[in-house]
Length: 233
Length: 219
View 1 (cartoon, rainbow over the protein chains, first blue to last red):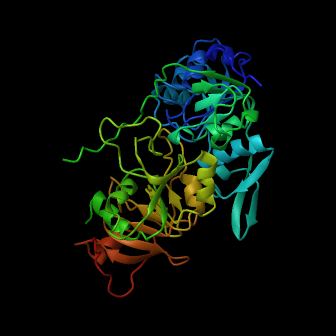
View 2 (spheres, rainbow over the protein chains, first blue to last red):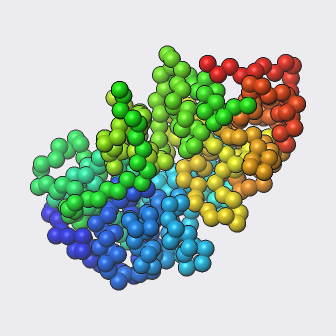
View 3 (cartoon, rainbow over the protein chains, first blue to last red):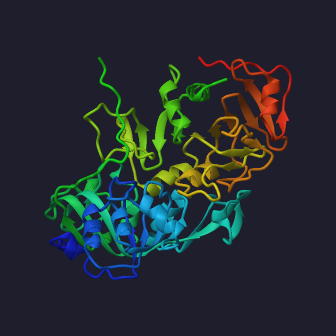
């Protein structure tokens, strides 16, 4: 089944104002930068974005914040973005902070047909307020519900025209779970090959979860915290 | 009195051969620099790697290989990469033997607050709530008092909680303490040059001092 589309712009066709999007990535690592750029060039607004982080001021989801296209952000950590801070404090941006493991599992559950699950994370904290509590094995747990999205947008290293995906390094992060939880899932890849060219044993995300795929050119892959050690003498 | 490196050195002596360990941002990260000889531990970073190695040499940074602090890292031979749901399955499923993290406050029943200060910008809890809710063994690395000189070891946390009844051990610049199930902090060791009296004065939560409290060994 050929799922190839020509460009990021074609890939985001059908995304409308007010929709909920999931976007893969951890910090700036493994974010779907081509689709984010295409969204920034569009006049789509009022988006709810589910993503572990919110980018930095001039890259990643920060671009959509600058242009005020995001109404609500669902994330676990948003600390690297001054524009985010300004909009959150002024009340222009609604923010729902979720423990990182619960965020991942809520996406996984959404894609796996599990409507809710109990987790110990957040019990006794404000995250647990108003949520059903049950004790299992002598330990209290809170009920968390699944997350799904109108569109999930993920970034992979390699993909084929059937939508099979392979990720590289820690750029994998939230991408595989989010890929399963979109009504429509868009994959952007650094290298798109023909059907049959990837080893089935190496596929991380089976193509069944992906509806559209395209190859992006010249990934910027910005590094947030460049840390090195000196060369040994 | 210990500096941050000293705290990390003392915690590194708690590592045991064969453990999988998650280190938080800040002082906990330094623990990786002092793994004792003959002790083989594997470091996990919750963004999705087991077998995290040291920072790369300059010029060898890979944008696709970072830790949960978003720093460029390397992967050691035998490393494994996985997605975020699998990563937290390891954490919640108690496949990771030790979590070391920082804190703003710890209560004498093991509650921890380390993610939010009311009135200040909230950045989010990241993976901290999942880590503290599930870890078998949590060591907190922090200064004994805050910048205003107030104790961070309290009868009850005043800041919004990250988790309840979860901290097992605390290493500060002044002492190593254990959290008992019902009697408060038990003083295990004094930092070099620090007296029991000074630790008592800097600890607001219940503190158990039994017998002669030894001075820490760092090597």
